[in-house]
Length: 87
Image 1 (cartoon, rainbow, N blue to C red):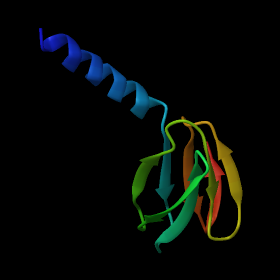
Image 2 (cartoon, one colour):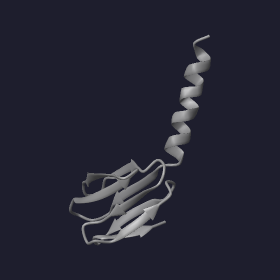
Image 3 (cartoon, helix red, strand yellow):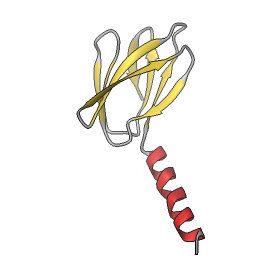
């Protein structure tokens, strides 16, 4: 009986992760970006070479240089020389 809720939870987590955006910092220095999701702003520090997953249901991403991008969730974003490249 416990297997059904656990299986459902596993599918739900996999679905959420699949629709999340990823951010990779290809620069040699760390950056802090601002993620606005559901009207709430959060700073996200990303070290050089690091990749983070965020933005499960649409958000705005603001980079240190002021670039802003609206994301739906499944995008892959790279920081290249301080600028966003959305793939």
